[in-house]
Image (cartoon, rainbow over all chains, first blue to last red):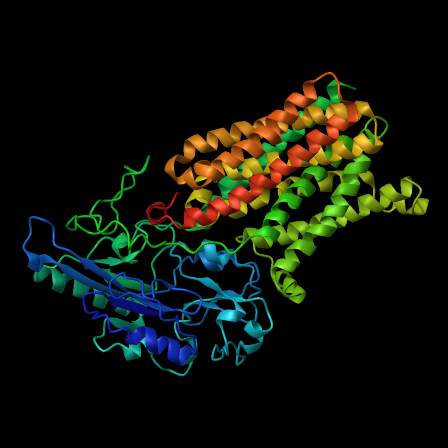
Length: 277
Length: 326
């Protein structure tokens, strides 16, 4: 099994060190200084040049509960590196691959910016980077090449978390996991992380905290997520889909609809031209 | 802050346990109403490609339908061959211009990927352009523009069938391409959008070829073609209505508000019903055909534009995006 992240949201303190470390290591541009008013979250979402995003949920106590029940949730979101990745299936150039660490990686020198991966991600992660957003891109190692060429001269490429492919290649832990001061973000072999995460859910349970793993052993078409999460609220509270669906599963129905409609029209055409002949 | 749970969607009660079931039920239902999905960056050029590609595919189907009766419908087969070729030449230009740098199109050709509808479409376009070029060259030869021997290079029986089958694929695959994404509206339309694409592309091809026949063809073939166009358009109308009803609230970005009104006015009324009524009127002749064709084509463009723009709004709805359609 490959490498991945276990992001334990009960340990996150919202310091955003992961966001900063990711930007620094991958030389991604800043997101600007816009104030959102959404708690402490001014990053707002993952994007082409934002590969870690700390979500903040300030959740008031229910009316009948003591004020101490107020929840203050933080969660560092990231590309899920799905077992069955919608972006990878959609990619017409083969730019998006599963690398030797079993992670989903965009080869920037092969991506041609068609943009089909963007709406094909069930988690809304991957996005196009247009050159105006992106001053001096460097640091994506793909077979020893960098992507300077890919983004500067082209009309844009798709960007998302590489799971620090370059750091993994030389045996280093990805930048976000390395920087995380509470080990909310843990990097490692996915099987090992699963075992650790399940033990953590049980430990929390014994202390009376309900939690669950998101992206492990769920009965859905995207399969297990190499980057999975321990959550204490429903997925949609963190802007994760409750039920992600692998988009390509709709293709057979679509192609069948095309074939039937086209056959019906061809038959109609044959009848029209025959009848009047 | 809202403390409501997600409203149950139709047909979702039998889906088994969801992640997070059994937790205290006071979580916010969305994350500050922020979009959960990323929206496609496609705009004018992609919409134009969807529109032209549909007509191209429909014209290929018309070549096959008319092509095996050379003595009677020779004028339709002739115009449909020229339209197929002209659009097979234009479509790659539109596609390539949307990639920013022409050479990037070549990256599409380094792999044949059955899982990627876009890869299939690129190869379909290339596969179409071969017989389209051969058929148009043969037609030019029979029309006396090119030397006669060229007509014997590509047998009509072969190019007719190839254009018909690949054309049907080209008219419909764009619908599959849209529905095979995470966009809730498009996913809900996994049967309707491909079927509507085929109907609209085919109707557009009938309209364009009828206009050409009005300029240089026989009335007899043109009337038959207009009849065929009515069949395809009415099917498109019915499918749109059924899609509207089936999509429920996920269909709102497409069918509600101003965009829905535009779709009803330009595509369903002006693009389908008006040309259908015009075609039935016992007067008007060629001018009427030209007007009806223009209306049908404009309606087809508005349909594609509505699909793409509504998809972007659909991506903004975190509730629809949380429980994605199967």
